[in-house]
Length: 314
Image (cartoon, rainbow, N blue to C red; front, side):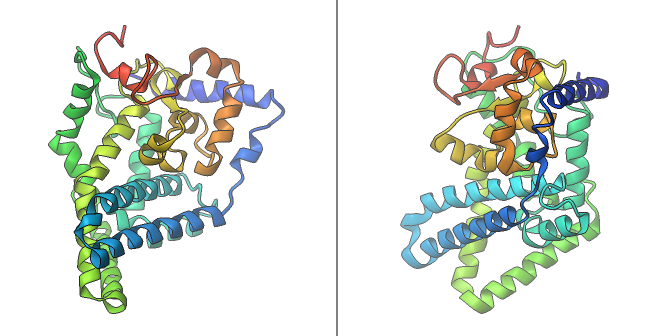
């Protein structure tokens, strides 16, 4: 199990090495408030376009629409993640208002609950009973990585969490649940007024179907890429960076979400500067010696999935 001190030790060592570079990392902390607004607008437009395709062209477009919507649900989740760290705007009121109005209720989330859980994930990384995002590896991994993946996919608890968000989670306040429901009622009433009943019903059905299927498949894979199959001992040994390009990265890790190790080491870096932070960290001795970086998802001996099968862990 990782301890609070091990987490802080890894962060302190990396930051000390960053200071010796002359503070090259400071530019990485600068926020561009217009960037997340543009990305949120793109996500909304993509989801509405997918809805229009199903509603106005026909069900033949449903498979592509599900992929688009699920991928943008994942991307909006990444915006929520940055809002949890106040990486949209350093002014808490502005940061939280943007997330509460445009992102969090859409993905069935309470920003405050998300922030509290995610803070525990950072400080109690890998701690059984303490880390809310922990995917515990079995004592003996299966012979093929697909069995590890399907074990998580067919976990009813994991599926329900991905599908219902904080609406179905225990310990969420009535006020938070009421706000999510009220937001959806208001948004759907506006959509009904502007686009009509068929479009609105298609939006609701597509949104829920995507969360129940493709979104869950993507989210499970994404979460396993973060830590699954690694040995505890510190952030550097228990967290991965996925330095992968191409369509798989677009599908699984939109908004640079694959740079998870980089994020844990310096959480104040906004999502759109993570590739530059990763490139800088790769020049640091601590990261070079102990950082885990994968450059493939499925193919090759160094693909991330190899850590999910027998023989991967010492």
